[in-house]
Length: 354
Ligand code: IPM
Ligand code: MN
Image: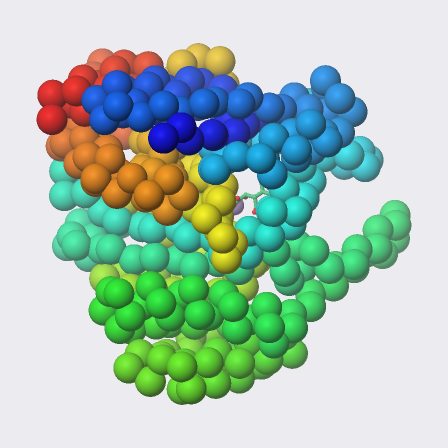
C-alpha cells in the first residue's frame, strides 16, 4: 500500500534534517517493501518568499490530501522584523488550526550513554521516560491580539470541550503507561486554569477512575521537572505552558536536537516535527542533529501509517546509533562529531542490517 506524505522542510536547518529523514524513509521503504509518495510543499519563511503567504493554499491542499505531514522547522532572522505583519510562525499555527491538530505529544526519554552530556546531575536522569501532552489549538496562541506602540494584549480563552478532548488523549496514554497523570496549570491566578483544573478533575473522575491525578502549578512544575524528572510520567497542560515546559524538558536528555513530536487530531492524519526551531545560526553547515526528526518519523510510522514494526526498528536503530556515539556537534567532542548526513547514513546502515 502506498502512503502519501506531505514533506514541509521549512526554514533554517529544516531542509538539512528533512533530507536525512527522507533518506531514512527510503531505507525503510526498501527494507519493508513500502511505497512512500512524497509531496513537497513550502511553509514558513520560504513560503513567504515564494508566495507571500506562510501557508499558501497549495500547501494546505497538499496537507489535506495526505496520510501524514513531516515538517522541519520554520522561522529565522530574515522574517523577524518586529514591524512585519506576516511571519513564518503563522504558517505553522494556521496549519495546526486548519487540520484540527489539538493534541501535541512530546516524549522525553533519556539514553544511558548520552546523559553525561546533560547539564543536570546524572543520578537524577537514569530511566526518565515521560510524555508531555500539550494542547495545541487553543489558549493564548489563538486568542484576540491587540498591538499598538503603547499597549498590547493577548487573550487566553479555553472552553470545557477543548479541555475535555485533550485530557482524554492524555488519560488514554496514562492508562497505557503507569496510570499516573499530572495536570499543569496556574489555577491560583488564571480563570482559564481554574476551568482547566475543574474539567480535568471531572473527566478523570467520571471516565478514568483508575488514574491517579495530580494538579501542579506551572511554576512548581518547572522546578520539579529538573529536580526530580523521574517522578513524571504523563503530563497534560495548555498550549503556552506546554511550549515552555517541553523546551525546558529537553535539557534532561542532553540536547533539544533529540526530541520529537507528534501533533494529532481525532483522525489518523498527523504532523510530525522535531521540537527544536530553525537554528539559523548553524543553518547550511550540515551539522544539525537529525535524531529528533528521525524520532518524529518513527512516531509518524506508528501513529499515522500503522507501521509499528517499522517504528520499533527505527527507534531501535536510533538507540543503537546513540549508544555507538554517532553524534553531532551539539553532543559530541569537536574532533569526534559527525555531520547531519553521516548520522543519517549510520541510521540507514543500522536499519538495513536488522
Ligand atoms: C513549537 C514552536 C512553535 C510554538 C513556534 C514555531 C510557533 O516553538 O512547536 O514549540 O510556539 O508552538
Ligand atoms: Mn516551542
